[in-house]
Image 1 (spheres, rainbow, N blue to C red):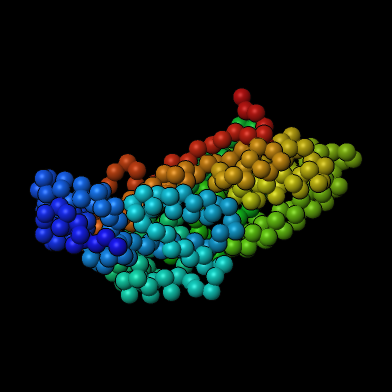
Image 2: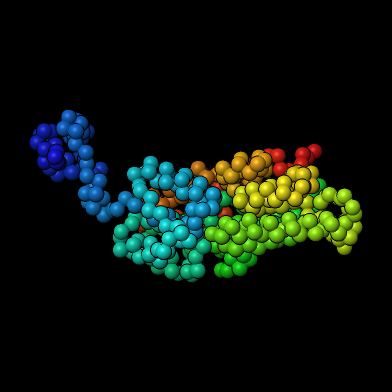
Length: 372
């Protein structure tokens, strides 16, 4: 097997010079570097990555903690993130807290023991902020606030809420149901510090609907890990719609008369994750409702499920590639400069708390009514 000594002999340089070139550390003249690289090519020398990492005090591994891979949002995010980290020659060590026995504490322990270079935290956590800041090792958060000195990346959920509200107001919605996770996760650490990823779009949507005088309600399911729970909640919602319709005038549609319903307009719009939206399309078909005439459906995420629901969903698209790019950039910077303060410089892409904000967009599909 060819080693660095062989390369040094071939290039006519010292072993230390070869080491500096291989590990990209220290100054080497352009002529020396060229001779070493030429010798490496001629000898077909492949540097030992483990040895390089040990030399640099690195493992080349980043822990990525998500709640589950069964949810298409996190599967899509991990796929994009793994590709971005690979471009930085970093491997992804995945922790799905609901799908495996080892949770975030095990990964934090590995980080403290220098068995990983950093952690990207994208799951709900009950640990207080000082738990994460006390680790003293690189951590980057996605869609949650872990501490003032820990970089955060999130989608622009406020804009997402505004886009959904504008679409529903303009299309004449009268009674909107939002389906999401338990309210207990909405904000358990004070203003702006929620560990529930999409609370901001629900809050913004509700405020906009209130301003427009449109009735709305929130249906809470289980946590994001309980994918079946979302399906059950949507099924129960449509059973309720059946009861509401049967209480009205004979032959009325879900968007028809309010008679027999206490003057409350029937539910005619449903908003939730892509999983919720896909389940809603299925239930609408099963209950003989026309989408979008009787009930409009808007998904939130923009995963592949948005195109596999039986109809092309109208969705708020989160930019997975940009999210992954920024998460990777933050963790690489934190690993390379562990003492740097990430939030030191404010710019237009950050909010008041210093979070890196990624834009979202509205894609009109077949599940909402046309607007003027």
